[in-house]
Image (cartoon, protein in one colour):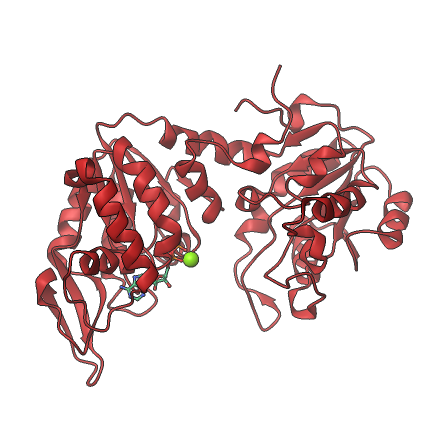
Length: 398
Ligand code: ADP
Ligand code: MG
């Protein structure tokens, strides 16, 4: 990586503002998956070991500039304390007097967690002056800045980007270093043997990645609800399958603009569908979808074809499940691709929220070379050819 990391600067005795990604899934006030908290333990451990005062800041959910008690970071702080078996001082705000007092009273090696940065409108403000004014307040109690929030690094927000204008040095944490290094290998992959698998439901957010990847891959396999947008854009019937007008429009534009690369794009040849009125399930060829039916997964022939392509690949990048994997048997397509990735001896990376949940649920995460903690961030990194605003803003090496 061409950016400085915490290993390149002296952190001893410094008050270090560390942006982390603690945007963990919660149900009834309980954290259901603490992967993102575990992912920053190496950075926190290094900083405390060097005698820094660690001031953690992060966002949770979408409170849109207001205090929303359900989106407090307090449970994340409690979990962090359990994981490291050390006290974490939680401050009920992320700026102002309470923060200043806690930091002033801290000793080397202490850990402080600040409340959700998104409780303040300045965090995400499109008005740059407002965003920067808030960033200045956030930076005030600290001597330097560390970005270890890979999953938020595609955002030009006060805590990920604005604070770099007010603190120096600004360096990467160990998670950001690992993510950038491992995803860069995908960006740099040779076209021959490079296979991308894209699926999921957020089609509109992913059209840009399809466009960016097509010139760089040998094969781009499309599954999940994303496939139905391409079906519809070609005038095919998709019955009641999940698909928005916006995604059809996006898919249609791409089919025109990327015509010269379309032989690399592979769409499902069959589907696994459910009749909404009766709950009956059936496989059908791609052209056999009828009104009243909802295509919830790729079919067996597609499964085999995709798995075969993935197994032989030199590099695989996967984002987005192949179907409605939360409801078996519609997890079969996703499972087939996940297993094939496990068997593939090439370099394989999974990025994305639900895709990662799927492979974790299937017990296959350990088989991958890299499982990104960032969904949108990993996609944007690939799309931009290896750059993210909150990483670019850090101090360069040399
Ligand atoms: P990721 O988080 O991996 O980027 P997305 O958020 O784009 O993926 O999409 C994941 C969601 O898409 C999952 O909840 C999955 O069940 C759903 N999904 C995928 N394919 C289908 C389909 N054919 N019909 C309904 N839902 C689908
Ligand atoms: Mg998702």
